Length: 182
Image 1 (tube, rainbow, N blue to C red):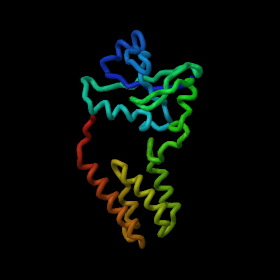
Image 2 (spheres, rainbow, N blue to C red):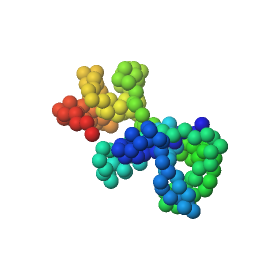
Image 3 (spheres, helix red, strand yellow):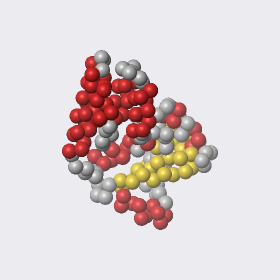
Image 4 (cartoon, rainbow, N blue to C red):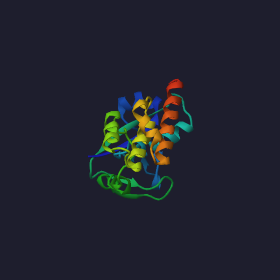
């Protein structure tokens, strides 16, 4: 079964739960259908249109509806607003986006415990590239283990020293700002 996602205004949820997604769009040659996007390993790539739809407004926001189609089900594939080609659903989810590896920054980062283990494994003074990667991920945390990074403030590599300052500034900045849900 091929899995796709359909983005729709939140006001449509009761109707979709009651009777499913209704094909109201007119596609190629006047065929009715709905726009779907293959579910990819990367959450960011799968739901990229949600960000665009949010810009257009709409009351109540938008929701993602996951749809499973039989592998042999014919679907039209192509870029929005351009001619499309009919292929089986299994082929539609196996195209370039599905085959490409997800971006390494998608999804959750390594845990703080894992990052501290990497920091210890880097040694003293440590390989600058490995230390900068650990510092990058620590800078994304709401609170960082700043005390454990004190030894890196005098690292011989200026890039590592700069990354430590960045982590310190970002962590301090995040702890001062209130959390505002979107």
